[in-house]
Length: 133
Image (cartoon, rainbow, N blue to C red; front, side, top):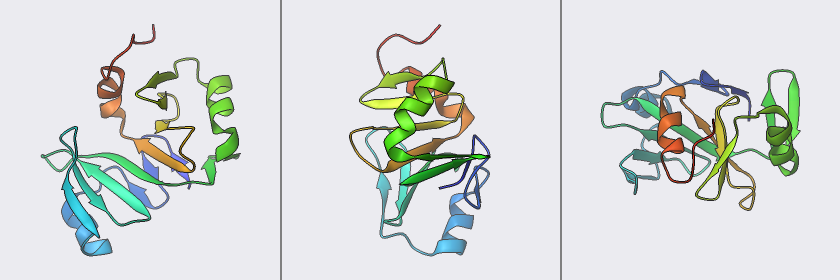
């Protein structure tokens, strides 16, 4: 998985609309509303989550290796990498969230990584627990 934080995942920009996704990938295996009110389009290898307005919030896919610019991080080292390079990182609901790198992941559930749109970070912070300074 190649991540340009808050901009794109692989070749998919965060400006992607649900209609454009359907044109590019066709009908998803599963589609529906998740427990936090986002509309999911699940293609098995990747899940896209949109607001009702059509704004893309998250892209989740398997990432045994994450490419962040000129740095390549195996999933097994991702938590240590985030801890060492993002002082604003925080945990919510079992996920490690990195505002600097625009991602969230559950270290106990390899190898799924969720890339985040910048505008959804406040919702992750509000999930519970204390927000970082």
